[in-house]
Image (cartoon, rainbow, N blue to C red):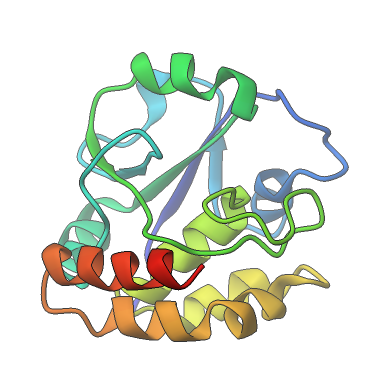
Length: 171
């Protein structure tokens, strides 16, 4: 099985020492660009500002076009995403384990977001490989094991949303 191509729109708005996107780029796991026009047409763009949730049904699109994360400051995120056009998907409920946002739901680093996407669409080995470059990375799968496994086995995006609602009721 070939790996999914990973892209990151990197806007240099965060601390470079904590930037998971740059590290993914250095290891050759993702292609970084600072230009919106260089985002591959048709790729799945991970966005917190869409109602459409990522599900295993998105696997074919990801295999053909790749997955794009946007690495920008949370302060500027709404404005940044407003300028983008594309095939948006949001991630369902997951908890961050990165040192900056540890324990906060939905506030994933770029690496966590890409890894979660890969896991959900059935590319678990690639997901684990990219998180393996961070000391805290493997813990992402420990903390989020139950939701990730449920989302990865969902038949549809509606089923992913129903699982997400269950986790929101628990927390």
